[in-house]
Image (cartoon, rainbow, N blue to C red):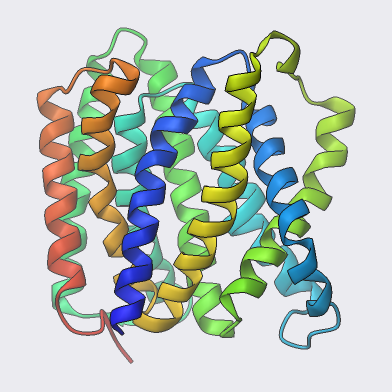
Length: 291
């Protein structure tokens, strides 16, 4: 179990940086579709040797492959990258990483009949209040409609990632196979559409901007974080693994000040503290669900 918490800690570090790097990508000439292409293209190329031996694996049927790719890969990635082009990184830290525990628990309860403990419900209520504080902040901004659209993308992405975690746990698939399948299948589904029809901004971007997104999105987020999250989900369960991710908001909010020049508002600070409190409450007690 300790290894599961260590893996979840690695994901916290990776995703804290992911929020900053993705927001930098959203501010650059690169489109959200460019960033997604770099993530899936680079990770698929590197993980192809791990993907090929899984061809014909009875645990990874075609419907399962597509479900994992469209939830934890393609669907999640596109939604959050669009969100980063519209809303601050601090919002992503709270709404994505705070929303994932909420939607993981709700999906487990409504779809897979996993009954959360009282402690888990308490943690989710605390985290939900933190997300409401961020929503209040969005209304106060000058271009509130654009920010709210970005926030909606963050919440939709959190929902898909919650489904992804539940599926990995339910199907008991090897974490390396999950990461390889998610990357390769997402690239096969996405890259042809991207190359033929979606807008691109590579010509206006610098080499440094492209390299930063390629390395962080393709290697750190697409391989390291995805593998560690799958491992943590198998070891400590999707509810507790997802609640650990709520430690990301305060880290992202603080890092956004020097790297992005985003101010720490009262709503953002309170939201981050509430969501983090919910994470600690949920991750430190029991197994998170009652069968």
